[in-house]
Length: 369
Image (cartoon, rainbow, N blue to C red; front, top):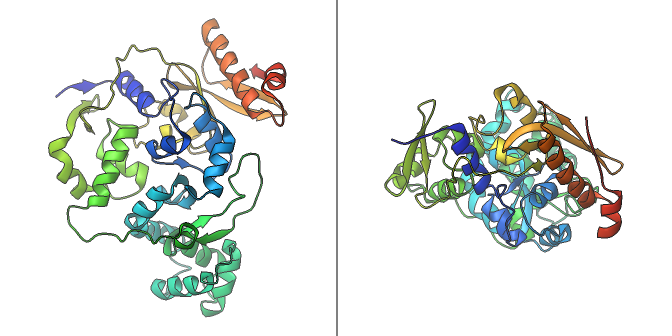
């Protein structure tokens, strides 16, 4: 079986994640291809898409949110993701058990004795009037029935697990600050979520496996599980095995992939890319060594924004008052510094508030410490 080293896996990841070459595709298609973008920090998906698309107008993503083609909802790993409406409806039922278990993992003691089916029914009854509510407002509306549980556990169980919800605009719109207001996913989209199938072959799981490998492969079952939070999707993987190809990594793990998916030459040049906080190009794997050194793995879960140099995490970045500041994690060559500075100025231009392209370019500043 062919062994793929870290550099081969890195280039495959960059290609699948649209980070090797910026893609010339519509924003909605990019969100679908990437299986959504992690989005608990509302502005971060805009940087993620800017780094991946040749021409990205942030107002297009805002319009997709207000037009209900894209939604913000709890999904993979119980984190808020920006996903297409079609994917939210197709995948939410398959994630329901995992979402419930993850909230219980945090609040099992507080929710002991709470009948979760009754809690779900009470939450739906409150939301049936169509009025958007914060998590706290929803929890207070049902708290009299379960006074010992506390509003936070009740609210998180309802909003993140029991009742499929969306976070409504203006939260998540470009350059907009807004609190979380929740509405029923089915009411917002005018369609019910797809029911979780009973079939042992798990057709929704099969679709998830194909989509994951398209955007993240080659990957191990443990990587798939780390991305979605589901328990490895063994029935789906078994059902698909005949149509997949297999490799091994240098640790001996089996890696699965789609036969026609891109696996570029390991020596393919990789441009500098600035990634937002919690980017799935890093978080979408259990073994992240293909893109980040183990010594820096904690950055990926701490909300640090990172810079890829030669395809790997080589720096962190912040922005304040129009200045993008880069803090290297290792020494940069002169060519690296030049490339990072050039891409950093382009990012600063993109992030500049209220300036025309010419004005933004003139004031774009990057500082490499």
